[in-house]
Image (cartoon, rainbow, N blue to C red):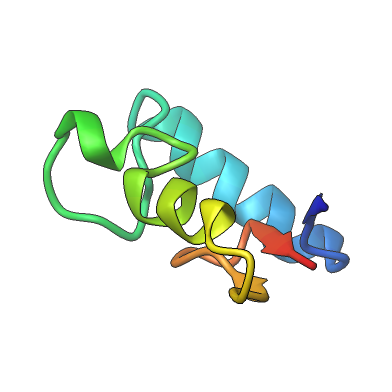
Length: 63
């Protein structure tokens, strides 16, 4: 299950960063396809049944 960070301040800050960068992760340098939210790194982590935790920027959490 994927959910948003429970802290509304964190969510608002990251969403503002996403908006400012055109949907690209605000924590990553470069507007590369693999940095478009949900980023490639977290998509791989979501596919891993043993991974539990936050994406790189902290917006999403995989349980």
